[in-house]
Length: 211
Ligand SMILES: N[C@@H](CCC(=O)N[C@@H](CS)C(=O)NCC(=O)O)C(=O)O
Image 1 (cartoon, rainbow, N blue to C red):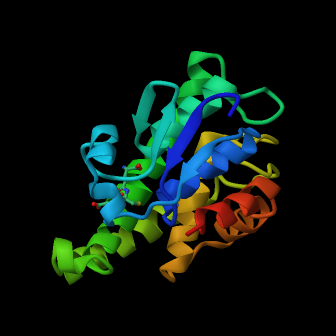
Image 2 (cartoon, helix red, strand yellow):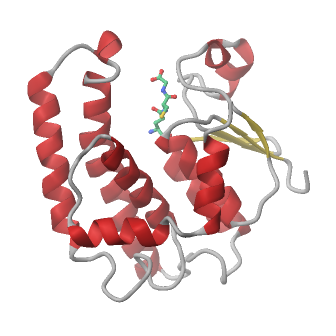
């Protein structure tokens, strides 16, 4: 492995983000196809990597990083060549990119989709909360509708011709929403279809399904 990169985790929207960025950047990496809440995330070795016992986890040499958003940002900045992934050099460019990233991670992922996941699919751990689930669904729909006018105005991606960390975050949330049967406004559905044509996206879907 030229870059000594190792990734732990498969099978979820958050692990998909890390595989996808690796493949967009053409990186060769070792990966451990471990799933959440399994014996593999409870070992002493994994606990040293991430005491929260969550995936994904990236190791680059001796540097260990958790949090899918931080992982893809680190990879994009460390390995990007300008033709592959959009990485702005100036403060306003970075701020505009961060605006999207923080919006997707906080409003679409943490405050909406993850609330639904915790209290529907994982209710044996986090408890039943039908009112919170209903409110999270409505909150997701409201936020996606509000952002829909800003996707795909003549551009294939959020920031023009090139893919960015924000696209990977948004796309994985739109896929997550679609698999939860949440309605997507037309511009968001078209954006999703367009981005899904990328070969690295398709390769990442396959890798993220590894057992
Ligand atoms: N904010 C974290 C969330 C990581 C996370 O919750 N990962 C899930 C799989 S998608 C997990 O490992 N869950 C294990 C658990 O809940 O104990 C990220 O984006 O990486």
